[in-house]
Length: 94
Image (tube, rainbow, N blue to C red):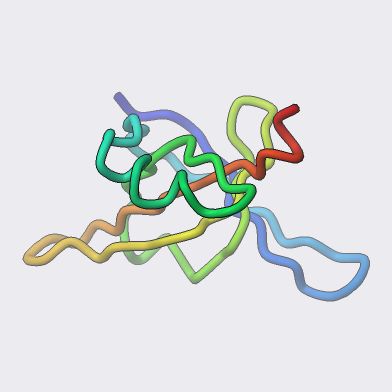
């Protein structure tokens, strides 16, 4: 299902460029959670599947009122889509 997210890019100390796009939102798999979840203060939340041409290496995403950090990306082979793996730091969750 297509949902709206906001890609955020820090331009300078006081300016953030925001780009609203539509993408597929998927759950994090158990293997992804186990691989990354053991790292200090990382809590994997979502996998966003976006059109590659819409993604320009932004490091933060706003989704459902949450500010998430992109910790990993994966360009799908033979497709024009990129998977963005986003996390919320444990310190931000508690």
